[in-house]
Image (tube, rainbow, N blue to C red; front, side, top):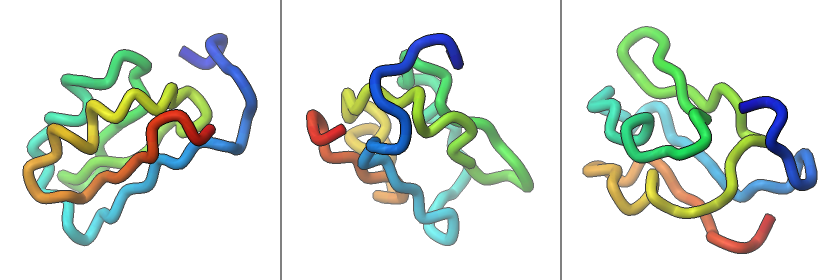
Length: 72
């Protein structure tokens, strides 16, 4: 999804990998394919692709993700 951008470097998406349990829920609900997995935990692969819909944060069972919809 690297061709879909609004403004680079402004997304409010953040991930605390120390809290992540590797459930992959974020990648299942993300419409922009922002996440990948390394060493059994999520990684933000394409942060500038985030459209700040908030689906990842709402569906993360342990609160490892946060996003402030509409900021970026």
